[in-house]
Length: 204
Image (cartoon, rainbow, N blue to C red):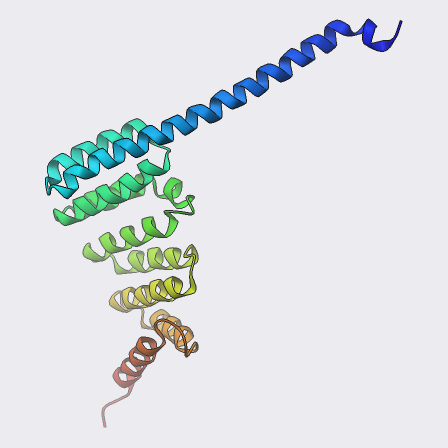
């Protein structure tokens, strides 16, 4: 009697297990796809309130959408939109806290990584937390897809560092940006360096 005949039951169970695992994987993938589709629809429904200018309703709709579809890309986009709405109402601390809750999660998304750091930085600047804002701008630069964006974000970081009183770091960043004559912010970088140099020179 050959091996297959002797172990036919084990082979059969192994085959069933493979089929079950494959089906489970398909259902899981399909479930995630359906959830993402529903989340996208819910996001655009919430955005209607934003477009209509009804910020309190938009805030409520976005919070409900985020709670229900947390973990989807649409929920990440909704958090960014919610933070912006809170900023528009002068609720900068609430907007920052909203993003802090899911900062790491959203930042892992290639699509929204730079966005979350930029929006966070904007809120922190409004709260006069310039050093923290500068750090967020630098994070945005590190995750930027294009050099021009990276350079602009680093320029914003330099300005924030300057506002924080960290002239050394600001000068370091603008010096680096000024080296690229074709860079998106090369001209601004040289102007800023000139201003820093003029300020630091003793009056005769």
